[in-house]
Length: 172
Image (tube, rainbow, N blue to C red; front, side):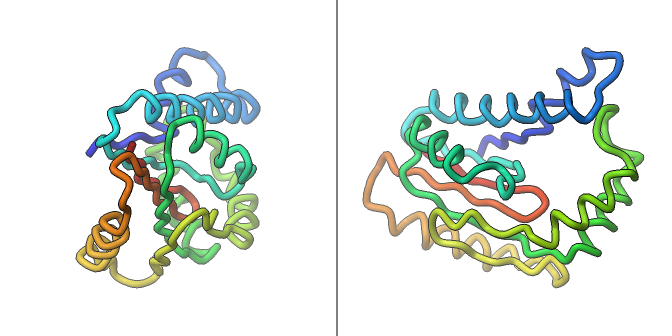
């Protein structure tokens, strides 16, 4: 199943600039977000995508508009519930792996604040996954299969999201 990420789309463009500040990083992120939905819109009706992006602080109306424009009719969300402390620890552990242009350690206090108020978009069924516990992939897969098979529309679409970053499954 194709996997689309905001960073996967954004980072090749970030490498084209000698300097990427927060403003440019955010602009590229918004453009990548738009590109994801343009790609989904061009897919065949049966194509299913996993979409990785943090949707929680995008305006919900923007997401609704992108879903509508892309022909997505069903949304399924997997919310990775994560404590602010764990979100900060995971980001800090990956600082040396991040592409040039991503925020550094100075972002950690802001990330903590964001994680404190992050919540699912809840545009459809939501499965909450506690990130402080071992991942139960069989349970997640079973939930997805049951939830997606409940759709009667062959052109239905689904999306799944997570805290800190989102994982959306979109099918057309």
